[in-house]
Image (tube, one colour):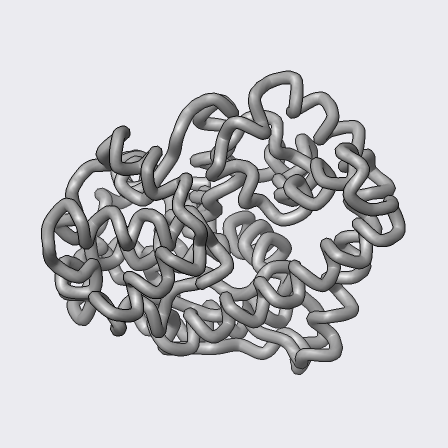
Length: 324
């Protein structure tokens, strides 16, 4: 007989750099414990961004239920506030069904928003945003360095969208963005036992996996996919154009560089991105880390995760199994 839902429903968060193996571990973990996966990825939310974002395949989606994939069109904006609303609803629904939410991805800001909420930053101002977008990035960075050095030190200075938003907040409120963040030191994840786990690999192994992933994406048709997306508004969506691979392919299609040069550049940009992800997660993210280079297989990593979750006593796992 199925037991009543318990208050301490487990909640697993899996983070780490791109290509580390998060998706593979999350899928096996969800299958083992009767879970459903919530994507924590700022680009997988867009319909059509499939190959370049390494979305789960139809076969994988048939094995477990996924959430927050393909939720907006290319012409629509998407931000952390929308993620928080949709992810919270997804987690509540998963737990109500007696299953286990597995949040998996590499977008640090979204994890942070889910665990600790959002600050009191103002809504975007269309007129100011247009003005800032026409301002050279170096000028925006100089203003940010002078008026909000804390944000300047932490922000990705190559990401024009985030720099523009930080300066926009400064001008609209007169206060640094860093002072308007929520208190991130106390979890607001809600009911349940949350475990935030980071996955890592040796730098050489991660680099090899990144190179193989990029080669596979181009073999699968990333250029054709990008050509199709350009007809549906990809170039007009500044957020979607930040997606690794697509921006470089668009430049290739416009004659900026050859295809071999583009492939190599995507590999370089992806390795740089993975390094920034690890820097961020090491500072703000998981308290528990699992080195996949030391695991014999992804199954071993899943067993390692289960062993690290104190709330999952044998009775809990039996309860979870009855709901599969």
